[in-house]
Structure formats: C-alpha cells, structure tokens
Length: 112
Length: 114
Image 1 (cartoon, helix red, strand yellow):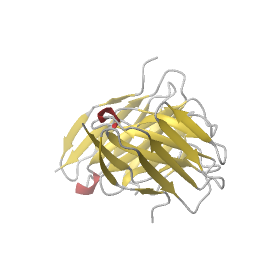
Image 2 (image 1 turned 30 degrees about the horizontal axis):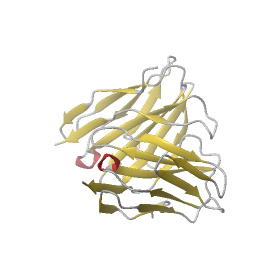
Image 3 (image 1 turned 45 degrees about the vertical axis):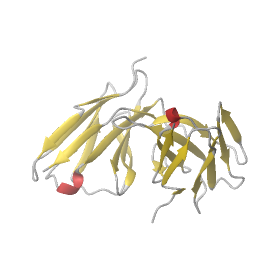
Image 4 (image 1 turned 180 degrees about the horizontal axis):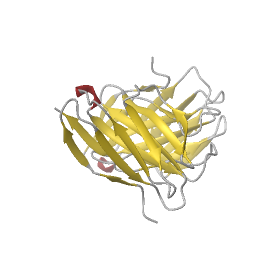
C-alpha cells in the first residue's frame, strides 16, 4: 500500500499547456516536499510546505498544501521543455526523523 | 559548498556477492539517510544515521546495513546480493534532525546485479 498516492504517473503535454500533479494520503504529514529528478541524478528539492493551506510560488510553479496536511498539489503554468523530468512528492511524518515517504512520481514530458 | 558525493557512481556485481557504497555529506551536515529507488517501488527509505548512530530504519532485510563515521561520512553494505537489489541507491544529508531540516540528495550509485 502506497502511503502517498501521486497522480498522474505519466503526463505528456505540449509546450505552453498548464498541468497539475496531485499527491494524496490518508495520513497527516508535518511537512511535504516536492522534488524534481533528471535521469542519472538525485532528486533536487523544489519546495517545502509546512503549514496547512499554505501556497508557495516558484516562478511558473505553484505548490499547495492541503488544510488537513494530508495532500498537496503542484501546478505548472505554461510548461516548457525544460520542465521535463520526474516530479516526486515526499512527506515527513511527525517524529520520523529523516524518513521521507515518497510518492511514486510523475514522469512529465513537455514537447516543443 | 560541495554537494553530497557518492562513490562509486556505477557498479556491477553478481548474485551472492556483497557490495559497499560510500556517501560523503555536505560539509557541516551530521545526518545521512539512504534510499533505494527502483522503477516498481519508487524511492524507499533504508536507514538514517546521526552522530554515528542509526536513528531510523526502513523495512528492508538484515542484508542491508550501514554505518557512519566520526566525520559524518557513511557507508551502506548489502550482503548476499539478489537480482532484486538492482537499483539506484541514493544518499541524502541534512544539517541536523529537526523536521524542518532539508534533505539534499547525492547523484546516487547505480547497482546492477547479474
């Protein structure tokens, strides 16, 4: 059973389109991170959200943490080919230290 | 500051052998975590070390072990390798153990078991 359900698993869109990736759980997290991973490399942190209802913007990327701290979303506006990659959400549960729980990932392909 | 480094980057072993992977954290970081990444299971937590002590452990068999040295560098060992151990092994470091401390990942070691 996946503790963090991430959807969709695959997404292929044209340059300029918008998209949203979802990360859902029945568990509460103290914080939630979004990472982007390119082939042959480790995940690179995009953002950390810690407060229920929090919204963070990073240029064309908007991240939201659910009010109940059980879900999160990543919205990309006007996607570009450079956004192509694997997007991972990861939750940090209370008192679990460095044990991040990862979603399965969303493989995004943006075609020019 | 230099990022997290992992050696070797690629490794090919045969079933039954053992392997040791190394991780050097970002300077000043005292916590090191290890993850296994496979296409089927995604990223799964193996264990975390802080101040040379294992602080947390994932659901992996005892064949997977690790240690941390006084300079915070860490190694993980897998004994009696199985085909299913083929994966990208990622190391992540963070400054301390606070929940807000960000984990920074290394590039990983790609292990192939034949």
